[in-house]
Length: 431
Image (cartoon, rainbow, N blue to C red; front, side, top):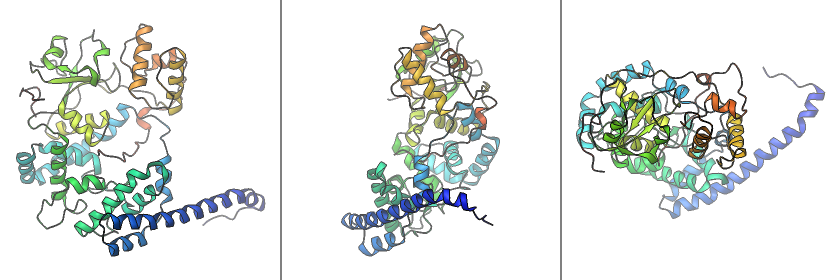
């Protein structure tokens, strides 16, 4: 039962309560005006007026959506924390179970779209735990709230209008359109534009329904990946073993080169076997620095990143797919890294700038510029130049970390936005 405030505390809270009431009233008034404008825009873009007026009349402002849009995680997600939460024994076993359930369908999809079954299972598992959690937010309310907010109004206005057209095209129920706070929907968490362009009526019932039909969802995922550029017959990449003298400045997408050249530099498969002599392009990824696992990424790795623009995500999808197909776990151990706060990374960036290694405005995000700055600093100070903010780098730059916190304890942040060569066949790159 709510407790009553004491007189003094109640008085001290009055200004805050008044401000919150004023904010809510202003937001509600602005939202009403915005809905009226968007109604007319929807009609002008081809939505039936009766449908538009019915939909917008029901839309409610969602302050929680704005809160989530503005929030930033306190800690920076590290690869060990990210990977260990996503590639789990449960997901591997459930993926195998769902593979068996949809075996015939998955074979048909592979034949038509060139996307192997274990990859579709991996995407499905990472996006919604095979449909067990598809989100609970009212999608149209969320999109309308974001469309009426200045920060990304243009993008979310278009997604909202596409979603309403989708509702009309597929005869969907407004109340049943639930998903993530940013509008991703169904088993495969498609944004409205991806749903409109790539969703397929796989079960032949006359409706492409990504919430209620696993067949529609898997067929749509295969179609989406094919359109994103999936290269049939090739794997995503693989875990590798780097030579002791490897020059980490050669890692990263800008250093793509044929597999034959990587083999000549001493790179081997994770089990110590030779890479092979394919001349397709690949690049080295070291997501946890020189003490963690290393990977060789192929064309389909970048295709996965077009679904979700994250190397961590692409590695998780690829390795989960491998595990579902019966391949072994990672050979290399995941390093036990500390939990970096965003403030730690901001201090790191300030220190790099101060030492002449320009990484741009400190923002707490470890992007390409920060990795390049770290690498330059490491080279200048006779460290292994892996571009990773390891403990040696942090200590050298005077960045103090919080004690007794581990990266694997950091809650995972939601991923709210999905994307929107003629290679030779070789045993190393085959699925």
